[in-house]
Length: 117
Ligand SMILES: [Cu+2]
Image 1 (cartoon, rainbow, N blue to C red):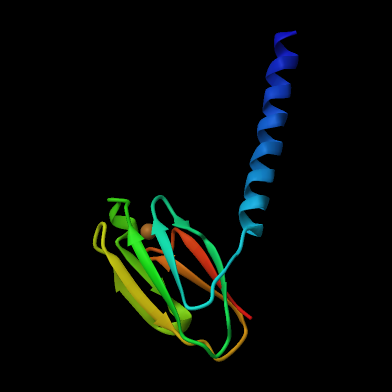
Image 2: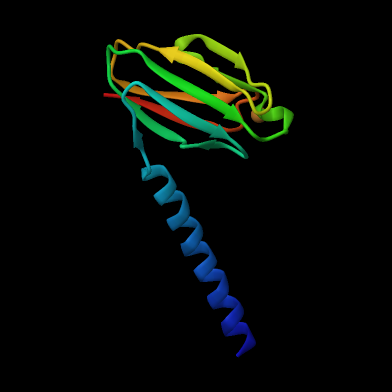
């Protein structure tokens, strides 16, 4: 009986993990003008969509003291910014091409995505 419970718990855990990550990936916040992204153990919202050919301001607000998140890198836009704790750092981008652009922390450990439509 114990073994069954352990096995079931394991299976439920696996299903939940998959579901959690799938749901997380699907979540996309659509932005016009500006958006606040909270940096705390990752980026929230993690995936945003913005319009092509328009300037969008992305405000990073870092609440996480981990050094790892002290920088944000938008490689496709050639932007690397320091994020002091509890300060709003604004990055303005004007993408001219539709597509998906990733952004990461300074060490490429945390990831977020900007979808240009
Ligand atoms: Cu990092």
